[in-house]
Image (cartoon, rainbow, N blue to C red; front, side):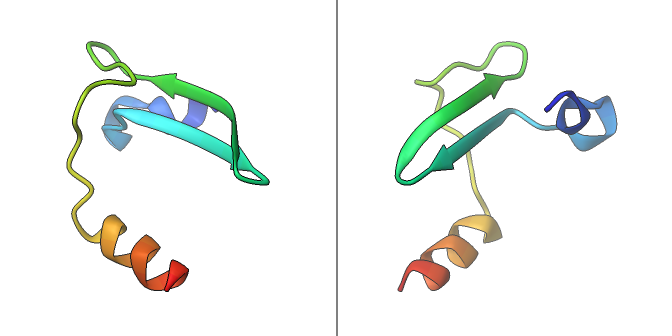
Length: 51
């Protein structure tokens, strides 16, 4: 999971789910589970997949 937190990636958070449950989560500096984050086009892709 460390690879997604390289400075070039600009990752704020990373969450892994399995069978509907969160099994791992990690947050970048200054971010926690309550921090609102923008999803941009990712939100559209996830919503479209679910629908």
